[in-house]
Image (cartoon, rainbow, N blue to C red; front, side, top):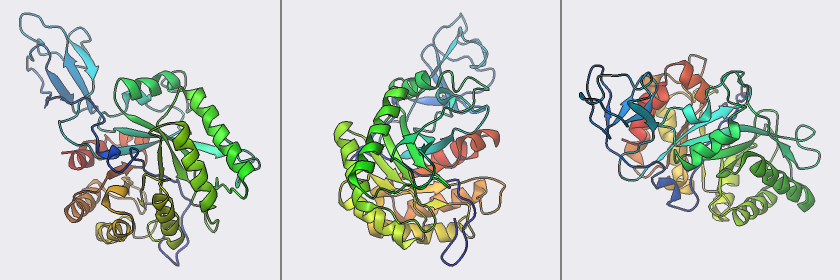
Length: 357
């Protein structure tokens, strides 16, 4: 994205999501436990939960020999160890990540770093291309190089029911804006979301990822759609990833929140000139908090070597400034999970622990 007066780079559209209602996004999303960081050669007692930092996952000792876990490595010995989930007791802020469906060999959803407590399925796109011919959207599975497509439905439900994560369907993205000029098109959209919901076995919300160039949002109809989905699926989450500086985006999010149709907004601080500057992030987040309230704002990060993306250190600095200014900020998200994995999980292992200490 780009500040006012600057042409935006092609936008990979990431956003953020929360739990339904003012406090739902702060509730614990994973089973609470007391985990320790795994160390080589240590013999752990039965029932001990460890964080295995090489992959960011938690494991529990389920069998012991005469010497506890016998110094084994969690990822090698499935007799001693079983993968589990863990959250420290207390309120949890959102740690979200986007999971694009264009990656040929993505990590399976159930194997995503355990510190992500919310995963966005990116992305459902309009039938007929932007701005949509009928109102319907379709969703395609990701690549199956590691079994992500074959196991998609099962992994989504495992993530929701066993791991305690939220799964959100993101609609739109760069080049996939949508318009809703009438109720008929809006109803068709709702029906298509319901169809994808059934196809995937259920999910926890929808991300309005539809901020496109000069296309203004059809706010009244998008409010109706969002409330209709919330009525159909109790607890359903609605969010959006606006451009941080955009006045149209700000008014859309304000109106949606005021109508009870959006749980929170997540400005994207990446992929545009100056958006990776921690000082700019801190200053701009103040504007969003003034508009919506801290518990309605999530901070969007992008860590990478590309231009206008943050370094690990910049992301840490930005979050620390935001958290100091707004202790009740709702959380943060990362674009994208696959990049985080490729880089050794800098967001999950360095920023997420600051979001949920």
